[in-house]
Structure formats: structure tokens, C-alpha cells
Amino acid sequence: MFTGIITGIGRISTVQPLGNSESYGKRLSILCPPGFLSDVSLGDSIALNGACMTVTTITPDASVFTVDISAESLSKTAGLDQIGPLNLEKALRANDRLGGHMVSGHVDAMGVVTFFQPVSESWNLKVQAPRSLAKYLAYKGSITVNGVSLTVNLVTDSTAGCEVSINLIPHTLENTALGSLSEGSPVNLEIDLIARYVERMLHPDAQ
Image (cartoon, rainbow, N blue to C red; front, side):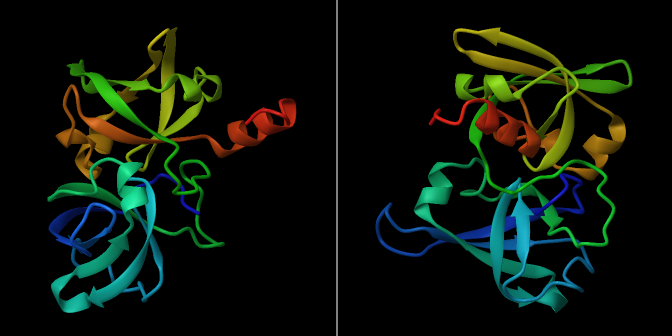
């Protein structure tokens, strides 16, 4: 379980295939900030751009850890199959502050950035989400974008899907990898956990 409050900006430094066909997954080596791994053990969960992964090796002196990600997970997420920056969050402890919202680390769908421009001191980020997620998205509700807990400022439904508008303050851009996004960038989306259960209780027969 996570909160969507990023605790470090890492970088995928190598991507190693685990087999000789697309049915195999990949092993990622992730370079993280100094000291980030001081309380991390083998088997711990770390969210990479919002996707919960298991630590398979640790090299604390080099600030590097690895994860093995399956072909299925790669097909359902964005930004985990190539070298580049990513958001890191270690799993929530029972005595931690819940600064964002309850995040499972299970990506619901991939969205696409449709707009990302400065507005006064902040930035306006717009993301097109699949239509299947529209019923879970609401004004002033929560959404996780690449692992970052964010507040929805506007929801616009269309036949193509659901576009959410989000305001990013400078602190968020400085302390996450969201600043590397641009129009057309794919992003990992996770809906609010409470919204998921409310929908299930209201429509128990829906798939």
C-alpha cells in the first residue's frame, strides 16, 4: 500500500530481457538517490511510476536496486521498458502519515497527456483517460498519475474518453519526474480506492 507521495526520483539505468521473445519480461536496474535504500530489504515493495514492484537485488553502496517485471505488467504500464527518470515510493508503514490518498500500486489503465503548459506560477496538466475510468473520476477527487497523488480540478467527458485537468505546483514538479512529461506522453493511472469499492457496492453485477 502507498500514498502517492513520491519519496525519490530514480532512473532506469539498464533494461535487460529475461528471455529471447516478447513473452518474457525484463529486469530493470534502478539508480536512486543516496540513502534511499538504507531501510530497504530484499522482497520489499517499491512503486515505480505507480506500479508496485518487488526488490530482487540491492547494491546500497551504488544506490542501485533491481526488479523483475513480467511481460503482462509491461503491457499494462508506461515508462517501465526504457531508460529514463521515474517516480519512486517505498511502501507505506502502519505508523506513517497519509499525506496523499490510499494507493494500491496497481495500475488501472494508461492515459495520454493532452496538454502540459505553465499557468502563472503553476502548470496545467491534462490527461485523457480511457472511458472505462470515467465513472471513477470526479471534481476534487483523487487520481494517481505515474504514482503521484493528485487532485482533479476539472473532468470533461467525451466519446473518446474522459479528460482530467490537474494543477501542479512548483514543489510537485521539483520533487517528482512529472516535469519530464510532454503532450503525447503515456502515463500510468490508478483510480481512487474508495471510488472502486463504491462502484462495486452500487453495481455488484457489473464486470
